[in-house]
Image (cartoon, rainbow, N blue to C red; front, top):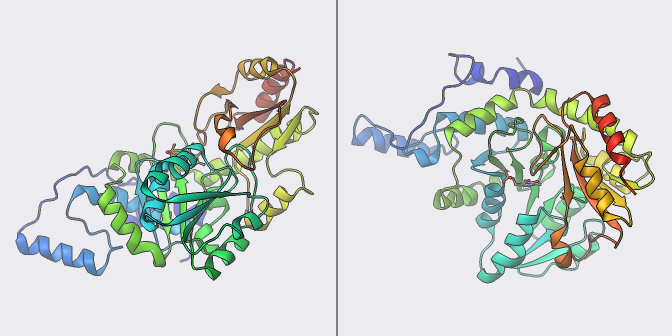
Length: 391
Ligand SMILES: Cc1ncc(COP(=O)(O)O)c(C=O)c1O
């Protein structure tokens, strides 16, 4: 019987175990075998069927991680999904799997700040050179391609500035030039957009955010197509980037309600966006305005929008922006997002200096809001009282 994905998410334990409603947490380093022959036989099976969940040592994961990978593979509609201890671990694994000294990479300018530091500074020491392109002008991408370009690393939408790119155009350029592609899809998750289906080789999601959904665990996923599977498998093995079974369990538990939570985050964010859009000091960085390029690009590829948005605030008085953020009572102040709760962060945009395309004007300030699962009318009332401080 074919099932919708919403139903599948609720029945994962039944599908994979036929025992308890929830899968057991299998913690293991050593796996015991009946004999040398049994160990060899298991290894031969793993060789023959690398997707079959055969393991001989805990670093390859246990049945708990295997279940999570199976669920995510179905959600992503990919060949396989690797799971890592953090979302950034998946970013690193994607790059490390295909890029070597002497190669070049193209990276979207407004990429997540640690991804920028990794590619711009750290990899340079290993003779891997990165060029940043303008997500709003893909000619800057095309003209930076050289014979050495190995990977195009996209993040959609861009961290902090939330631009949406023409993704099929990027894939078609990459395919023509035989360049690998990776995308950071943490904002939407494959619930709203499935990158492997439209032709990306690799797709990253920080499971710390919406997958787990409760701000109590960290993890990452890297979905791959068949073309890159062996490269990533080898890189996973030698880096030891393996998600622990307790964290895998919590992420599996969170996934049961991924659809319900994301639908509500989306609904709440739309209501908050409609309120904020009326404020003349604020430029909303969210796919909301129907005639904008960002909206069109979002609509072209996504079936929904999550709860993370940016506010570009025009003010000659930076203290008033700080006062606005500090006066919020229902929004926690802190890093990360994707949990059940609302959060705010005044982005200092420290890396502006190295950014070529995405910088702020003198009197512009950036505030990031994560719209949680609270009653949206309470969130709007809270924003209303805090916005009085904006001068
Ligand atoms: C877009 C994006 N990608 C990747 C990450 C890294 O995820 P993690 O914090 O799980 O390492 C983050 C974290 O904030 C993020 O916002």
